[in-house]
Amino acid sequence: KNQVEQSPQSLIILEGKNCTLQCNYTVSPFSNLRWYKQDTGRGPVSLTIMTFSENTKSNGRYTATLDADTKQSSLHITASQLSDSASYICVVRGQAGTALIFGKGTTLSVSS
Amino acid sequence: GAVVSQHPSRVICKSGTSVKIECRSLDFQATTMFWYRQFPKQSLMLMATSNEGSKATYEQGVEKDKFLINHASLTLSTLTVTSAHPEDSSFYICSATGQGGNYGYTFGSGTRLTVV
Figure 1 (spheres, rainbow over the protein chains, first blue to last red):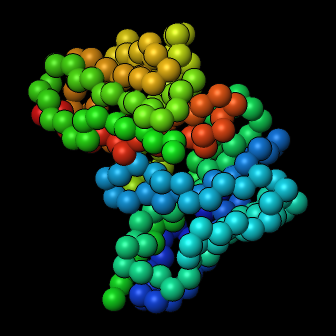
Figure 2: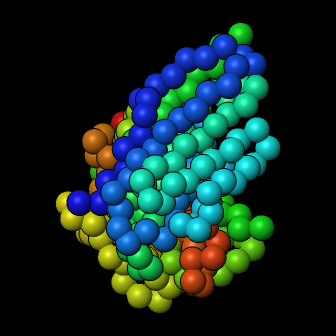
């Protein structure tokens, strides 16, 4: 069964600290993996998208990694800011024509 | 590029009335649009997939007569919640992708529907 599991479910960190969010998936065949940031009451906004041949992709303070062999991805946030408080969703696309598989997200709270 | 506009952002309606939500791709042709529903602290749940000019494909358990989807052009899809009930209150989000999926499934900003 195609699934995307994210951990931790929630995380609280102090402003300025780094954190890493995890995503494990069982989707096969695999097309690409995306990380989205969703602020409360807003639609998801894309942070990164990686195909199976890409290992790392950065977007400002966000760096995503992908290990297609172990079917694991991580999202590392550097020097966190209060505005980073949001839900981070890992989304995997299987073969063309199939629906996206969503993780349940990690809720990040950054406090001052 | 790849901007999806969703309107309205919030709507309150009375039970029994219908509500229309619009989803527009502003700078690309959206061959496929998706409609999602999201409950508090839950992930997005796909309701239906619509390809321009064809009937929408609904996910199991989604009432097609209650959630009417129209995708009449390459830049506009609408979701109409008919005879709304309080249990239809939710956050509805659309996303769109262009030819070949090269536009990365851009999401709209969502619509908060409250049925009173």
